[in-house]
Image 1: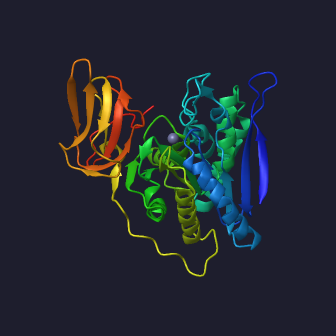
Image 2: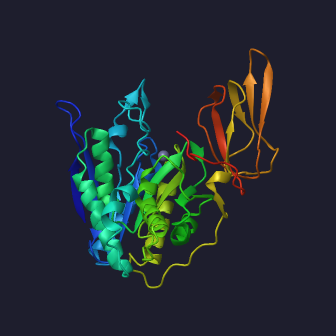
Image 3: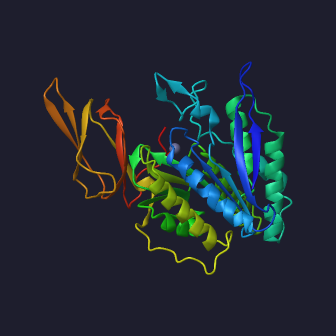
Amino acid sequence: MQRIDHPLLSPSLGSHKTLTSFHFGQPGRGRKIVIQASLHAEELPGMLVAHHLRPLLEAFDAAGQIHGEVVLVPVANPIGLAQRLDHKPMGRFELDSSENFNRHYPDLAAAVAPVVIGQLGADAQANVGLVRRAMRDDLQQWTPATELQSLRRTLLLLAFDADFMLDLHCDCEGVLHFYTEEACWPHLRELAHFLGAEAILLAKSSGNRPIDECLSGAWWQLADRLKASGRDVPLPQACCSTTIELRGERDVSHAWAATDAQAIVRWLQFVGVLACQQPPEVPAPRCPATPLAGSETLKAPGPGIVVFAAEVGQMLQAGELVAEIIDPLANTTQRVTAGVAGVFYARIRDRYITAGGELGKIAGAQAFRSGELLGA
Ligand SMILES: [Zn+2]
């Protein structure tokens, strides 16, 4: 194992943060897998999973049983992790710019298309190498102006050439759920099943460029550009990435983290990166994959105290009561019901809501939304 400390741009005199990555196996041989945790810095279950994964990966590495490379980034957002306001963690948005730490990643397809489209040929693997070199050149030429940009650039330089990138997040309260792009799903379905995902949300692209879609979206977007330009050359989906929501913010326990780390190890064995006697059996799916555009976000009709009637993980029918919003001044109770049938996969943590605030999400089977599909 090799530890690498990557200094971030210093935003202020006397202040300097560092991103740390741990590298297992042998780069350039076999597949490359990047696993990062807590890019939204108050989402800690993934950080604990990384802590449990590390000794397991060290043991495989020491025994020479890694075919390829695994890169582990347990603390993907040292900037957000240090942000606090009024004694509360503030790890989702950078306080200086108000930007979400997991949005606004660059459009790599647009950046490399002018360089590569004329050079791609009949050899799919050669094309992958060409595109990756162009991505690396583009990222290396990027001179970040801010600490946040330097964090984004450093994370992308670690992961741009990964075959798989797992971005470990969590919801406020929720069951384990899984976001990925449609182009990646055929290559990632086993991972969702090893983890026991209870909701799987697919989108061609969910918008606002989170890091996972920056990395994997570049490949299908380049393939689309090739098709549109009439070029008939092979370009595989060379990076598949996913955002894995490891339940809720308070679901930080050794039991959950050990379970999730073991699930990831079994998947790494399944894809041939970690050695095993025989590939582990893929567990039966716990849910079907559903469109992200079919996920209903329930909103409060007015302000008040939130009393949930539905627990996360519960299967709901349309019309079923999810929560009551209680106004003790007007002495009213407003009912919030499910608009679609599906699993109630996530809900808010606070129990007071303002008008129009989001209460929770249901994974419906039919797409009905369009535009930007992710929340703030
Ligand atoms: Zn998150």
